[in-house]
Length: 213
Image (tube, rainbow, N blue to C red; front, side, top):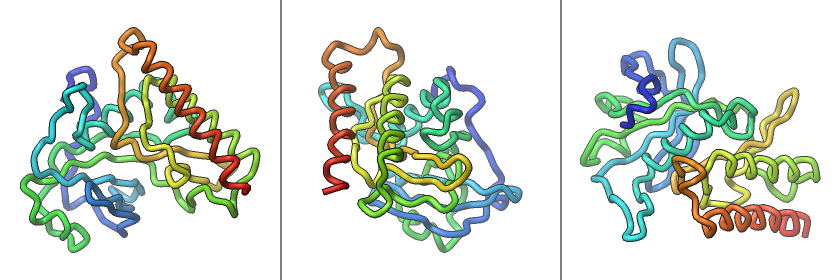
């Protein structure tokens, strides 16, 4: 991984990771609630059957790499600290021996899975037509602008990727950056790519009409 981030590689003893439950899964990854030395985290574990590489236009098809690059930028630009996305704690390059029964889905993969360690969001629920409010929707709009300020296209703009997290104050949190596009610096973004940020803002704005209809 990039030497720009020398401190975010985690090498925990596999025996120190206690998997409490699987939160959700897809064909590409699973998210688990875990404990490490008594502290709860969310661990996103990615299947690896070979690096799919990049498209002819240069878009990264590796979901682990997309998510890692996005969270590195989100952390560096302070978006995690401001609460609009989960806090980022680092990554595990290759998960240890697959022994826990919750990890059986990864046992036949070509390579051992990679993981990203994130803040565990207790009591979170997806934004929907029941819990929708003007304030929450406004926070989701601000959150997307914060993501863009970190030089990221989310590329997966759906209400299911917006979580309402109870607390004082309550948070509205964007998740799922495994198809995101991350840029190294603002000068690397073309006019078309800057316009795409505005397009994503418009997509988020359209949720308001859908969720109240």
